[in-house]
Image (cartoon, rainbow, N blue to C red):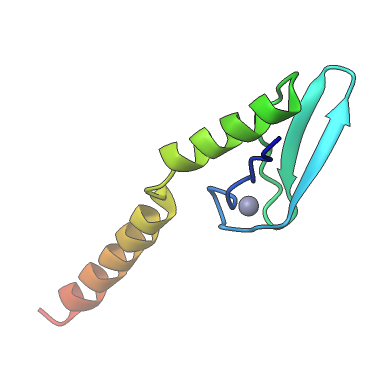
Length: 82
Ligand SMILES: [Zn+2]
């Protein structure tokens, strides 16, 4: 049986994922940013779901936020000199 490996965290890119198991299912916790993976009954299905989430999150909104803050800062700085 080939094991599916979980991809890095979609939020911080961390690879330290802790696999948690309770009666109601399995899920991942990112040790770096505390992001929680989807809770799924089957272990293999959980890895597949996590990986699909990583793909969906491939374009991080963090970049957009950082860019918006930078643009705001730049506007303020330029505005004063005008
Ligand atoms: Zn993370």
